[in-house]
Image 1: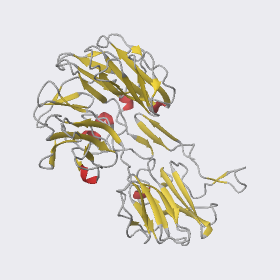
Image 2: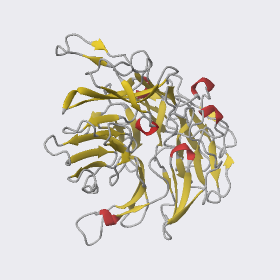
Image 3: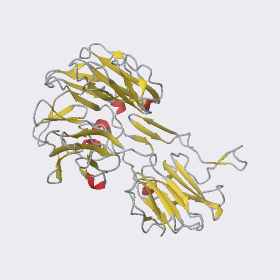
Image 4: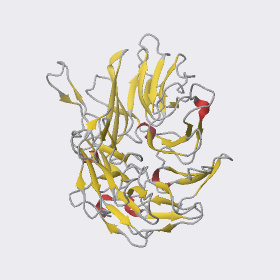
Length: 481
C-alpha cells in the first residue's frame, strides 16, 4: 500500500497509509510485515523469488530516523527482514520509478528499475548498470524458461534482449513521442516543432517532396529539451528559442546546427525550494516570438521576461502575475524524498498569448488561476481573471482571429483531483466572461481551445479524452473524436 498524493505544488510519497502486507488465504485476511523494516515508508515494490518462495525482496522508500530506505530481503517469506543495500540509486526518485524483479532461476540475481536499470548477481550487495536502451525504466519481463531473454520498458518504449542485456533491439521503431506544445513555420513544406517528453525537441517535415513517407531522416533536433515551447520567426526560422524545465532556454542556429544557453538568471535551481528561486518557471514555461516587434521574445517565469537581442540581455516586462502564495513554494516532494526537477514549481506563468491584431496587447495565464492583460507592451497590467474561476491551471489562451477584444481560456484542475472541464470566453478584453464549457462531460478536462482562422465562431477544444467543436462560438458543441 502506498500513501500518495500529487498536489500542483508537491508530490507526497509516504506516510501512515504506506505498508507491506501478506495474505495466505487468497486475500481474505492480511497481516502487515514489520520486523526489520522501516517504520515510516513511502512507495514500495516487492518480488518473490520463483526459485525459492521463502526468499523475498522489497524495495522501500524511507528516510526516517529509525531506518533508511533501500533494498530489503527476507529469507522466511516475510516474517523478518534485513536491509541488503542502501544504494541511493535504487530509490532516488521513488514516486516515479522503483520496481524490483527476481530472476526466475537464480535467487541471487535481482533487477531494480529506477532512472537507471540495475542488476545484482550477489543478492543485492553490488550493482551494475544495464545500458543500451533509452532510460527512465518502469517494467521488466524475464522469460521464465530462459532468463537471458528480457523485455524492458522505459520512457522510450520497449526493447528485447536475448543475451542478458548485453545488447537490445532498437526502440526507434515505435511512435512513443509525447509532445507538450507544437509550433509551425511558413515554409513549404512547412515544418512542425515541439518538445518531446524525456527526449530532445524536434523539427519535423510535414511532408517529403517526391516521397510517400516521413521517415526518421525527416526529423532533426531543435532548441531546448523535453518540455519546450519553441519560438521563432515563422518566415525565417533559422534561429529557434527553446526551453526546458527549471527555466533553461537556448537559442539554436538551425543552419549551423549549434546552440547556446541564454537563461535570464543562470542559477542551479535543482533541489531548491521554489521560494528560494529568483525566477519560478513552470515545467512547460512559455516562450513566444513577437509578431509585432521584430527580434523580440517573451519567456514566462512568475514575471514575464523579454529579450530583444536573442537572450544576451533580459528585462522584466511585468510584476509577479501569480498568486505568489509562499506556503505553496516549498520543497517539491516529501516527506522522505525531495522532488528536485521543478515540475512542482507553483505560482508560475503557464501561458503567454500576444494579440495578432494589436501591438502591445498580451494575455498571460498562470498555473494558479490568474489571467492578466497588458495593452501597452507591459508598462501596466490588469487582472482580468473571471470572478467565478477557481484556483486552476490556465493551460491555454486564444485571442480570436476575428475580433481583437475576444479571447478564450482553457483551464484544468486535475491536480486537485477535480476533472471538471472549463472553457471561458470574453468579448470585452476580460471585463466580463461567459462559461462556454457546455456539454463537455466531467472527465474530459480541458487542455486547449482554438478558433478557426477562416470561419468565425468555429471553435475546437482539446480535452483529456478527445476533441470537441462548436459551430456557434461555444453556445453549443459536440464531440468530434
